[in-house]
Image (tube, rainbow, N blue to C red):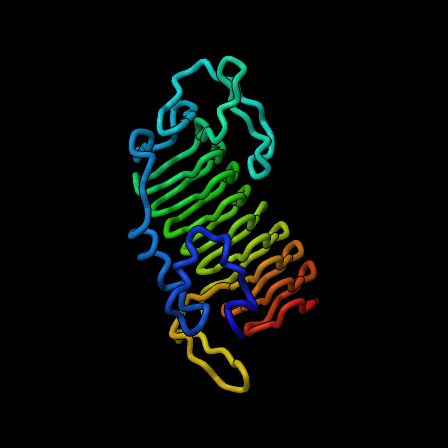
Length: 263
């Protein structure tokens, strides 16, 4: 199992998070430190530690636009969401709706990203460009999100990494996990992360038992992996590129080679 069997990191801005690892799951322990060392927070003038934002904020080139704008609602991941001032589209403008909560200042939100009402974000968190953080999303901190991603309605994320265009659109749980490029989680997908036994998770690879030294280890889903609705992965699941999980399936821990069909 090589990194290339799981991810293409050539276009990922934060590819250095995968440096100096022997096993891909070692990245999980690096997420918090990596974010703290690389974050350039840009919500200090907006964050409201005491509660939800009282009004909509539009930022463009580092400046808050104080009214006079018009929003055209669309898919932010496809560049369809638009902010207009005097009928001129502000390319790359970021929109944070009233009713969202930015719980501290250690948050970076990229260009063209939309934060919908009811989203709750704790730091440290980096969110890339042209993302959608949808109504009711709960980002618990130590979260690294690439470009063109979706954290969806009532989706909870903690200590996790999304590569570009990874989408968890509806009712998902993503703990101590990594989603590769263009991963799509069906509604209700749960990436279980806690070993109920008080011991680190062990995996069998190439005929050998390997101790991951992690009690919390959700799933690592390679590029283009798709999961069906209400599927569940057991702690310590690794899916290679292009794997597919049928709806209502419980995936046993371990490594699955690229393009495996799991039903």
